[in-house]
Length: 133
Image (cartoon, helix red, strand yellow):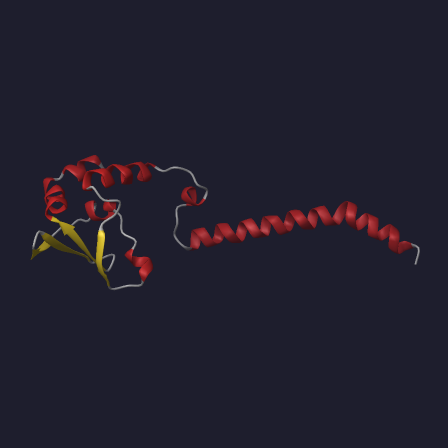
């Protein structure tokens, strides 16, 4: 019975700090795995500014809107997270005029239809946004 207090102090002195550190490492590893499994940029997960963030801000200013209007999504709501860079970088841009100055552009890879104004449509056709990115 006299060994229990001694073992207790050894545990708290040597094993508990190691156990705490291992628990922390496991927690961090699991969160990093979640980020990588979700196909997120690891730099973005660590809150590091990316050049794509700067380009996204520039295109938002050009198109006078923070993001394109997703008219309809074939996929879940997560698939509807479309940026102007996605629209500008689309290889086969072919928008259909809907009348009243509205155009619809089907982004097949993303499974969405983006609604554009005449100004936004003409800006994409000009090629200027693509030159900036």
